[in-house]
Image (cartoon, rainbow, N blue to C red; front, top):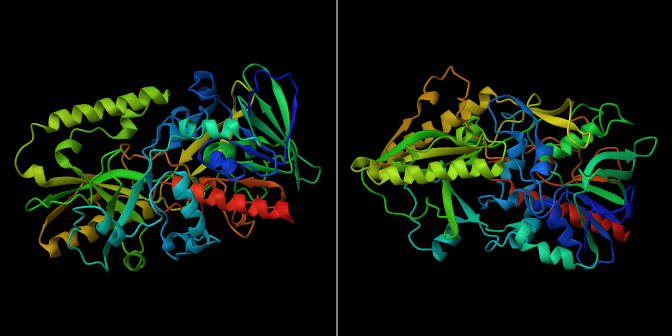
Length: 512
């Protein structure tokens, strides 16, 4: 069932059993998990079914610190969310990502990978992936020519990825609209959360749209699935009863914003061609491929973050501009066009490259960001068209981030040399070991994580192990905002699994 909130009478009261705020990967996955139950699900989407410039403008905000993408174009604000143009790269977090690591400040989840495994399997199905199996040995038997580099497996391992083409807006629209118990409201932007007097239970959500309509949503339980930046923004802006914002009594909401650092870091020059399909990827064709990863034992020994290295032919990569440069238009459609134009131009120029460069590769890092309380989302005085304070992002990296990237390639360089297959050349920004800074060309992955981090102790996190906001019995947060640490993989598979785990928990609470 669907209703456009712009067409409702002003001050309409919408009621249900569970209200999910946001219809992206997390929100849609959760809503579908409640399909055909006896409970009425209210699913709120701030936009419509297509791109709308006035709605997208609500995401605009200021950035400081390490150079970042325009906030307006860093997410998509319509049904299906950013799955509308994502690359589809999926892999689970590693067991070490959930553990407290004494060399990574503020690390450790209150749950383990084993707790998520059943929901990873479900998430694989939602994302239309293959089996929940990310072992190299399995895929080596399934696909041809996955010969690995001859590295010491005690030092370097092959982390496997699968690739989704799930565009939730197209894939699940019909199913959501036809579900008898799911009530989708488009153009319903949540702008305020109202609680009881002692701020222990949410009473209602206020929603608005640019047609000038204001509505109220009442439910037994509320799930915020607006995305990492918008979840923090909404909590901070809901300050009429809690001046510092809801869930923010320990000044943690918005802090520990994390991204994946994605940066060209080194060159791999092979002595001769190494024929393998293991490290290459073609969108819509490749079922699984690998990136080079450092084993947990070596991570602990070297005291580094968890990251991976991917390979791209240097003949192409040398002509590609950093995405941080080409993705600077506030319109995400234009930024995407700029990126693709540059990639096409690079591919064309690469045709003229001959000689040794034909078996040389650019090594690109994808690595977790060390949890940093100074890397954060705040709200300012400027307001959007609906009267909601805009989000501001301060993206701040640490010396551990730079040290980890450099050390990964020093480790890989030794392995390449020992194997006798070539040499690795560090990019210039990594050569000075006393330089902890990153160049402006450092890319993020558009992977927003960590602003409402999970911890059993309310002094260390915004939500508990069940994603419930500490101190508020019926307010929950779905998605990557709950991550205490971010691991190396793109977040969609894990945030879907975490959302399905939350859904399962809520079903159990409804039964008893």
